Image (cartoon, rainbow, N blue to C red; front, side):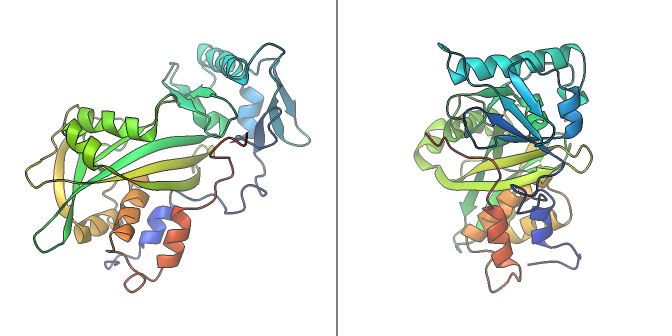
Length: 313
């Protein structure tokens, strides 16, 4: 499976999933984020962020135990109202005072705190500051030849994009807004990004589970978990994806071997590599027989993340 390069497919996953497997208990120096009375941590925050964040009075900081805890909702209030208001107050002041470059001095769409007991949301740019899990959805569109071999529709990102210009990407991908489901995200993005027929996507898309990863940014040291919901779409040969916005330059049809080689050559956006590798495993292109790291690859793609993925009530 590996060309002459020393890089291996497992390395492409580890580049994203680089937090220790025991991070839930070995999380120093990070502070755990709690939504009282829930005893489960929902995020992991850098000490520098804890010090700089303009926390409202509803948050309690315990430096000895390295915790940041949102108080219980007051009588007559829900967790949704209480938490959303508290997080928004902190983010508003952080943006207003330009405290964190990652916020770009502007507001952003909302992401959901996935495992919270009620609907709790945080602005997307601020999510890494609180170390919560972020949700994304990726669709791999493919065609099957008369010989049974699979070829994948790969998107090439526009060269003017701020992040990863010109790199290769999933057929369709997007961050999942707080109020959206993964499937709703994929249906919307399929039309907007790739001009795919809505009827085809609705009738033929196949959910394929979720990839779970845990990342410590090498520059900022911010921690976050990734939940990437993956979908497959076998497409008729006469359906050709085409750019529907200015984020994609073109779509290129590649066989599985070319996809693997170009991932190893560094031509793919880094967080797309686990998605493509997962697809190649599920479709039988990467196997125990041809990949020495097969077991470890499977384990890494479905690792346990240190924050809950669903409510416990």
